[in-house]
Image: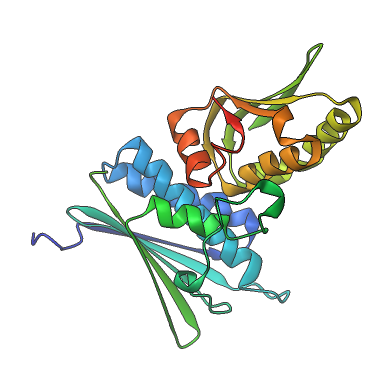
Length: 144
Length: 101
């Protein structure tokens, strides 16, 4: 197999509802664990995915009609790639400000901390939006 | 996931167990608010005992922040954290704001 080629791939699709959060995050954690990631990295990627999913569930579908979230996990030779798709309101996480960790607690604004945590737990986060479909791509090295 | 409350003479200890993810925090929030309210009215310090916790989401950090805002940052401490949990407190900049050990 060539160095960058995916050795395995798994997908899951659920309604964008909080009751499905654990099914989605456990799916990613199990995939990461089966890809021989360290326990620490499995926990990192699970937390990163949870924070992004909560953001999508809370904000991407403001109307009663909830859309879908699909996750595709791919294990490459040296890294894990998690793609999260949704059909809600576009939100480019790379344009979101970081939560200001230097502020005292009473001066911190609600929100922003989840994205800040995600940025610190994965190697790369990319966003693309096309034809009403948003894609977040997380990359994390298997050896970390 | 569970939260057990221990009332000591000079402090209240909340012992958390399991994964403190977004759903767990939502489930615990009502009981936690009650504990916070009592700590505030009795002027009692609050200890989060995280010996049994190996995973926290930002929603748990919000509970800690809420406690610090309501009863005072000097009255809140986070004890028995695992390295993974401490990492999340550090990323959020709370390891220096709260007493985390």
